Length: 365
Image 1 (cartoon, rainbow, N blue to C red):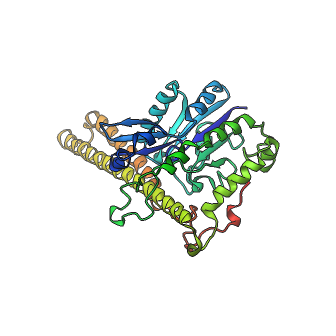
Image 2: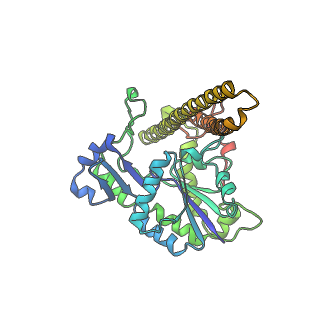
Image 3: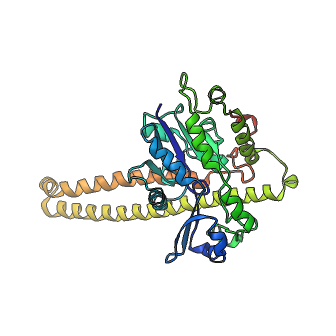
């Protein structure tokens, strides 16, 4: 059986610190830095911290490349996704074409975040029976499409998110905190990627098109205890608990989810801005071509001008076609930017009533 494993990037495979939050890294002692696997770019003031066992996991995938394909899917933009992919390839000594695909926010549309049907349509050999997503956000896994094809892993974030962010910054920073010795020790002990390798080894042949993690297949693979634990980890993101009874840790989780949603919206808005600029440029080119056509008709007459205007008319049609495609992308990104998420539960709200979906509708496994 050919298997496809798709990984989120941030807080799943790596923990990224950019120039806006570089001071938290500069203030980290050398002793604590040695506890982490990382790649630092001192010139651009960036640090990529790798989750423990990432090299061992990709070595396993490389050995089993004939039966396991690996993809990346992030809410960040395509440039960032490509940059991190190259860093992982270099770290793990992988061939350039190792990853089956690298998806970004541009590949997210519709009601469901990271809808795996997008992968199925692009790669017909993969389907609900042999594909699963590994993500730190329950909202990407715990919906109707992915709920039996996903694993929620604890967020790998030694430098976590500030529980009291500055509202005037409008989500532009990532609310990074200075890590304590306990944070570094906890990060070093993380073994989530070892669990992924274990699950891949246990993977059984599907029966009658079952989901990867259907009840029967989980029982057949002997993974009931693992998924019971994973279910509890996932449920803490969506269980309806009054805000007054939440612990400080739950509050931090809610703020983390809120920050992730803010980053998602900011990335979508940046893409919309770039696409709008491209569309404006196309409109300008189209206008120039139309002026040339009008001038040709005026000079040669309508009947005689067609031999001079064919090329310009072709350019006008191309501009219209590209502009239409951009409009569709912008529309999809606007849906992503405006999608309502419950920051305490991490699951989509009912836009009509403004209430969260009930536990019954989020039942899985």
